[in-house]
Image 1: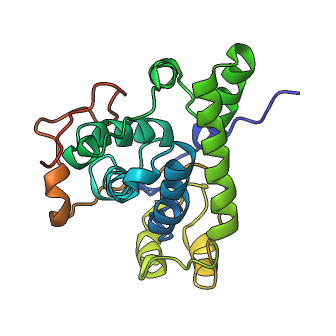
Image 2 (image 1 turned 180 degrees about the horizontal axis):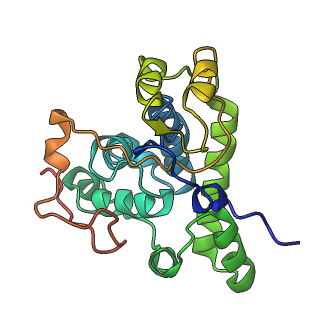
Length: 233
């Protein structure tokens, strides 16, 4: 049986208004990014990749990449590689003699795979039995379990409902329905974690994290292994 095409609603969409407004729930409609990364992603990075001796710096790197840099919202696997690269160049990590995991096969997979997610990773693990890819899958599944357990009861951002009503007269929702039809229930809705990776493309700037900023610009979706490494001394 052929799986349903998740992009079908957008492919079949017939414009009826001057504007189309699509709002991603995760991190855009609901303030879920902070709790997901600080309580689910980063603790599992430290646990599953042996970064306990440098947990403080691992947390800083993880928060920077996923929350406070222009890469906020990128796929979890390139983000993980960026965390390793930033930590490898950090002086405090080097002085502690902590080496980052050898993840060459994960880099190669992340560069070549077009659908970076657990199903594709699981398929290549079953095919190759690669231990690094297996470890990445264990980590990723643990992140999903943590999200399902932790991320509950989160309301929409303030003024989301008011903003959606303001857009309603001139636009359609991403589901192809007038925006008020889905925005009204948001007033009482709370986000519940579903174990999926974060996909928001929001950008956040934080003056306290400028020390992590790369020296040169890169593409919006950096290739693992080509990330500018700028670490504080």
